Amino acid sequence: MTGMVGALVEAWDELRLHKLRVLLSLVGIAVSVAAMTAVLAVGEMTAQAQVEMMDRDSGRQTTITVNAWGATGTEQVVPAMRAMADRYDVTHASVVLWTSGRFRAGGTTLDAQLQLVDQPYGVMHRVRVGEGAWFAPGDEERRAPALVVNESFLAAMGGATGPADLAARPVVTVPGDHPATMVVIGVMPDRWEGEGPSAFALYDSYTRVTGGPEVDPAMGAVPQLELWVPPELADDADQRVRADLAGALGAGATVDVFRNDQFGQQAFNDTFRLVVVGIGALVLLLGALSLVNIALVTVRQRIREIGIRRSFGASSGRVFFSIMLESVVATAVAGVVGVGLAITVVQALPLQTWLGFSIEDTPPFPLSAALTGLLAAAGVGALAGLLPAVVAVRVRPIDAIRY
Image (cartoon, rainbow, N blue to C red; front, side):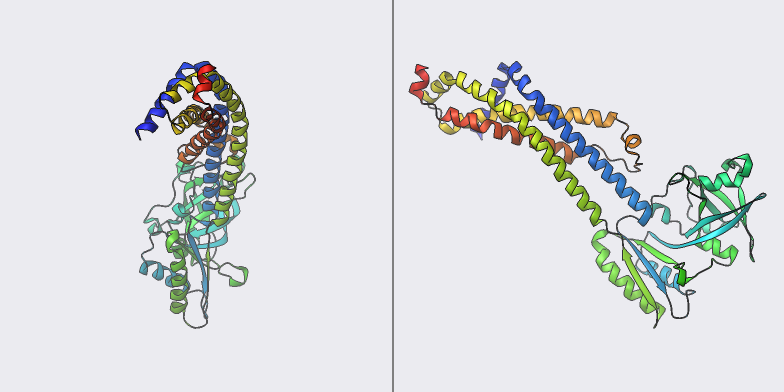
């Protein structure tokens, strides 16, 4: 341990004595490490944005989606689903039904895609509400059911006069056999340019005041149950949900269970990392070639010094590690500089605007990217210092003293 510390101290002293040489030889290493670390960090943030996009579409990992219908219809399906979620104490569970709705606002009639859900759906799917708020616990008991709409819906409510004012608590009427008035409490950004009107309502409150949505199993318009469970419990939960719900619905019931595990996304992230690390390693190796040349020249200039050290008892191993550690310490310092530069650049750039992704849980600068950059720099330093260290070991003391 003492020998290793002494070798590190000697390596640092040599670097201090040859600042200009070290600076010139390590500029390329520092820039390469900065580039590789920055790309890895941006890749990690992009992966987080893609995961959140998948969460919004199919629920967070791991969301289990259950489609079921009994032999006598779908009337008993939703109560059976809710009872099952309560038995297993699933804190994030939501009934989901896709349908369409016709609404009247003043003299305007508009058709919109309507999604009936439970309150936890907002967290499970990372629903973003730009103005107002998502449903709160207890909103299903409101006398006038709440409605969360997108920007296109709000604009259509205003007709030719422009978007309605959310602060005025705009209302819409649901026509039909059971007319109902609903209050808009939140507005979501349109998910893409040109998206038509769409809205969310709570399943229970909408069913209470309108008599229930139209259910058509032939068209796939049937209630679903989404359960957000920990990934390590997904396999067991999958089997339990299937067996439990099939038993509750009785003979002739059909139960389909789907999972949204993001193994494909993880494989893409791993491949991306390997490609970036490989390219970065090649760039670092090219920078290491100049470091090897300078180190060889330096060793030849220090032959007399090495010979004197050998004549005073320095072992071959001590000389070897002393020379090699000079390169490792130098590239490690360059790696620290490169990582610091990458952190500064990545945090200063408006990545979400440039990439076109919106990140809700913005991650800090990835520690894995910084560690990868530092390890790559140290590894290249070890490779670059290997040949000069071998040359130094082969120096004979008598020849070195005569040199």
